[in-house]
Image (spheres, protein in one colour):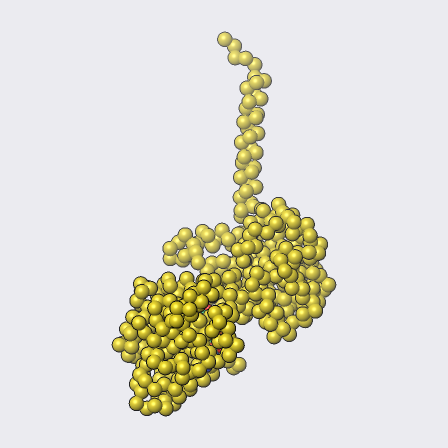
Length: 477
Ligand code: NAD
């Protein structure tokens, strides 16, 4: 079993380190955030990620998992060093901000006194692997040390990160040092996943191209949803009908208020920036980002068209995190929506099962006037005396809400379903004026009324023929 150091204990680093420890390796996770490390040393996981707390505690107490703020402690005896620090968008030109990576490399180069493989798990622009080699060569204090660099991009999804670690679709390894790539592959062997072993630039590009493709699917179906709205088709059924085609697939064809989170937007910007620097104008990438940005505004235009003004209206917001099963508020559509509402002097009542605390910080950072925002303790509270409710994040627990009761507690029964989560007919039966994304007048409602007319016609025909039979003169012998 290997001795591993993971630099950065965010969503990726903490999950990677913990799961590698669970595979039997000895892992030390290093982070500069002292409070976070202190919590983790006591088995407290600072983020909401299903299954992670149990796994951290189990491996911590088994003595395979350690947390520290000290690089020298973390690197001691480690033959594999994973870099999993954040690579946010830089201030200029949408580039990835590599300051955190560079600072980690500085510390590694200062402390490393034995041979090791450095593994780039953070999402880094194409060409970063070569830059990492140059940085380490330039800064290495113990010059006798030899090292290799392997790009190993991460594809886990927040909300199912532990599950994704143990059941990856593929593991991508890119390096100019094939032996190093195969040594990293050995760490993952128990996962029985397909390996893609390639050069560093290709591995880095696989990550960006994958995220760009997923973002494309989302923006594509959102544009189809817009067309559906205008032509009276139902995008949910369109997506279902398309998804049967194996060449297309059903995943990531859910129309809604667009994508958020820490990755898609920043990776799209970084890829576009890489393209521009390479002399390629990425028209499609820009269009995808533009469509996604507009998508959030749809909630506001739907509210305005129904309520005329938002001033002094009360709007309930169901779900705040950028997606269900996480407390991550990075680039969550809810932040923009709440900000736009408060800028128009609407009062906002908000609820999320786990993200209320992170939401407060995120809203404060965006300068939202919190005097206009009420943090509710239950989902149904957002509807009390509200003029509309908007579903922004589709948490499973919202399926079991008593919708009739919620509707009765509202001042005006408008429900904007930003994720097409609910059944149109059921919501209308509960008393709501229901508006989904791209659900038009609804082929389903058209179909069900057509179906009802056919049934009525059949019943009428049966009744008529029975009456006719009764009133008909007896056949003469
Ligand atoms: P994060 O912001 O949650 O965590 C980053 C951690 O790194 C923080 O705890 C921070 O304190 C620490 N850190 C920063 N500089 C450091 C340094 N010099 N030394 C030690 N620790 C340092 O980030 P994340 O969401 O885990 O993402 C990490 C990387 O993985 C990013 O490049 C991201 O694009 C990529 N990625 C993220 C996801 C995801 O779903 N979050 C999925 C795939 C890939």
